[in-house]
Image 1 (cartoon, rainbow, N blue to C red):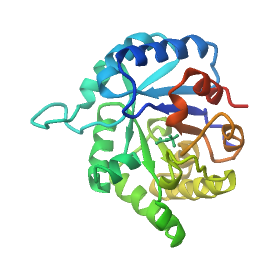
Image 2 (cartoon, rainbow, N blue to C red):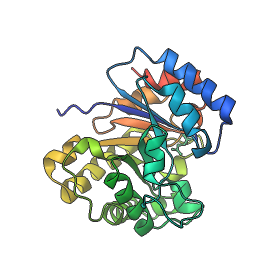
Image 3 (tube, protein in one colour):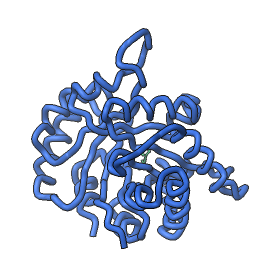
Length: 252
Ligand code: PGA
């Protein structure tokens, strides 16, 4: 069995003011300082990246952004460049989150540009894919994921599997309290690994981390993490308090 280093990532979405964010980050840095056998990341909003970056500097928690533009600079009102993110201490960035796809209508083509920009400037993208409830009910889950992966990863040449993380986040499970069962998650993760296998090489695909996201909490994390192809979790709501995120990072 191939061992992939687990990655537990918290997506703070549009939550946390500067005092809230720095205090949460300080508490996580303190409580998680001894965790050495897994990777940990948090993705605060843009406005607090610098402040959180300072708090986390020297810690074992990676700083992540929630989105990224593909250009270094230019006339892109409302966007943030990969170089600007790196300046705050970011090494990871979420790309293609379902809220970007569904609320802000980001297409696979746009997400692909963002992902390429991240890679070009040495940020590790957490590339999110996932089907809606209507698509699942019409048995379109695999078709949708295949299209998202093919178009989102188009033109990506990967020599190091640590340079890309994929997150499977069924839209119907995000923020709803409905989690995919561990069986549903494993079934899709194995399918996604097969997709990566076709897009890259078997060796690269077998080492790329595939995270599960969607209502992950301290109660369901252990069983999800026990699945062969679940290599980590992307956590929204339950990453906003130190107590629950620490327990998730310390899954057994
Ligand atoms: P949730 O969000 O854990 O609150 O469902 C997950 C995500 O959106 O990444």
